[in-house]
Structures are given as C-alpha cells and as structure tokens.
Length: 413
Image (cartoon, rainbow, N blue to C red; front, side, top):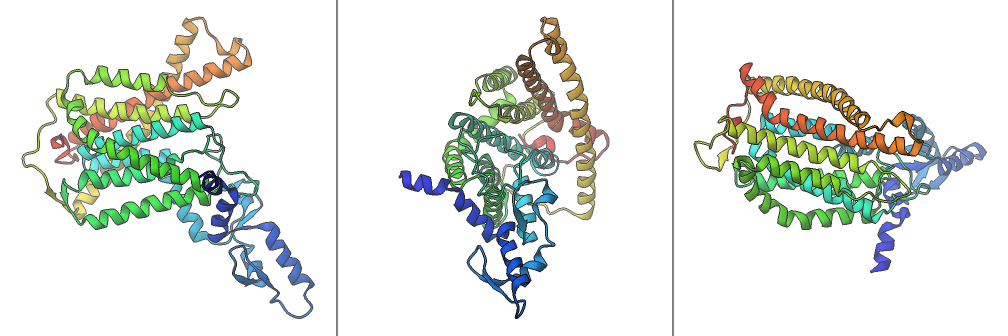
C-alpha cells in the first residue's frame, strides 16, 4: 500500500506526464544543439526525446521559437513544444478558478435554471470546504520543483493534498447532470460525455502544470465521489426547505459563520490563502440561498405550472441576444458590487478594529499581518455574500424592470 502511495506521489511521474504533452527541458534540448553544431556530416543528428521517440535535433531547433519559461515569468528550465496541449490545459485549470465561478454561476441562474443552480452551488461549497480543510490538515507539499516544471504559481502557497480542482472537476459537471437528468428531457449520454471530458481536462491540467501529483488527483476524485453519494440526494431534499422556511436566514448565517470560524489553520509555520478562498465559496453560497429565500418571502417565487420533466427549449436568435444582454449587464453589476463592497466592507472592518483599540500600523509586524488577514476574511465574507445575493435577487429585479428577464426564473422552486 505504501509503495503505491509513494509511487503516485513521485514527482518523476508528473514530469513524465509533462514530457508526454510537450514540456521539454532546455538542458536536454541544448545537448541536441551541441550535437548539431559539432556534426560534420549533416543536420540529422538523432536523439531520443523524453517521451521515448527518436527525433532530429534540427526539428527541435525549429521548436526553440515556441513558448518558453521566460514568457511566463517562471524560473523553470523548460520549453513548451506543443501549444495545443498548453492552451487546452490552461483553459482546463481555469475551470476551477474564481473567474470561472464568477461567470458560470451567474450565467446559469440568469439563463438556464435556478433550482439546479442552487443545488449545484451547495454541492460545490461543501466539496470545496472539505477539500480545502483537508489540505490544511494534511499539509502535504506540491510536487518538488525541480524535477517537476512548475508552469503556474498562482496556488503555489497552498498545500497539494487533495486536489480541490479534481474535486470540483467531478462535482460540478456530474452534479449538473444528476440534477438535470430527471428535470429535462435530453440525451443523457451527451451530458455524461461532456462531464467526463470536463473532469478529465481539469485533472490532467493540474499534473501538466506541475501543481499536483497523481496521488493528489486520485485522492481528490475519490473523496469527491464518496461525498457526492450522500450530498447529491441530501441537498436535493434540503433545498426546498431552505428556500421556504422562516428560520433559514438565521440557520444559514450561523452555519456559515461556524464553518469559517472552525476552519483548520494548517501549519503554524506557514500561512496559506485557503481560508480566504474558502470564505469566498461559503459566502457566495450564503448569498445565493438568502436571495432565493427573499424571492420566496416577497411572493415573487412560485411553484411551476407543470411538473418536470421539461423539454429543452433551444434558444432562438432573439433569446441568444437577450441572454447575452442579460449576462453582460449582470456581470457589470457583479463587478460593480465587488468594487463597491470591497471598499466599504474593508473600511468598515478597519473602523471596527480601531474602535476596539487595535491599529495595525501601530502594532508589531507579525500582529499587524495577522490583523490584516483577519480584515481580509471579514471583507470577503460580506462582499461575496452580497454578490451571491445580488445574483439571485437584485439583478433579476433589474432584468424584470428592463423587460429582459428569463420567463421561468421565478418558477424554479
């Protein structure tokens, strides 16, 4: 068992994947250039490439003009020889980034189905919370670099086990399929193919970019799969109660605050941004559920006139245009909300600290940093909670005023 774990954690396994998809070492290619320059006969000095195939050094000379590590501000000694895989896997890893969440979640609510959206957001939140928490408990580092080429440094401060990208990669697309398969009439195999491709690209991207070992990916997939067996049916039953119950706001606030308060701090010797990222996820979910509850309490949300399953309505040109307008105006509203709330909430929390007699600039350096990080948690909580609330409540009201609302938005209880 330990031998399997050690094998899957081996950074050379990650390096092998990188080489297979065209991430080559500059030092090995330099040997080929030397071979060419010292050759007295021809330019076809053969070499064995990292993936085992025989290639000419002349061919690799032509590839030296391709994307290299310096263009990415990376200190690794590597060259990208296949741009297709590079851009595919950069896109794949962005499917687990804040930009994707900030566009996918609002787009789904405004243009597809709010009932499915609420359930997917709750699954995503719980999966992310558990995955991020385990990272800061296990404290396993990311693959060693070198020998691994680190093509991305955005999450380098976080620990690696398990891969939350892998957990999101299986939880979001497959929960969408599970929540829509009995709600809409569409080819189930098509949804499964999209989910498998989505998950595969995300998982391989994390190995390709040198951010996770194979074991991190496998552990993330297995953990998310086990959690979804319980979460998907439980959340399907819980969603309606959270929307219609008068006690929902108090319960949601209490649970959300407790989740952030008891979040594990990780290693005492190193700070990681996972708590702040987890606060964002929990806050968005809280805002979405509060917005849905407000819609119901104001009498705007009602039962659908006909029970599922529903036929999929393929959009006309007019629907595409209105949906694009909705999305554009809505995302502008999200950006404006973030900018405004970031300033207001940060200033407010700093004022509260000063009122309590705490001033970061007058304190020791280490304590000042601790206070700034606490302020960061407060501002993220209030800002992203309001963003989630506006996505489901305020912006749809604006769409209704502008006569560009989605007709079934308020019937998705």
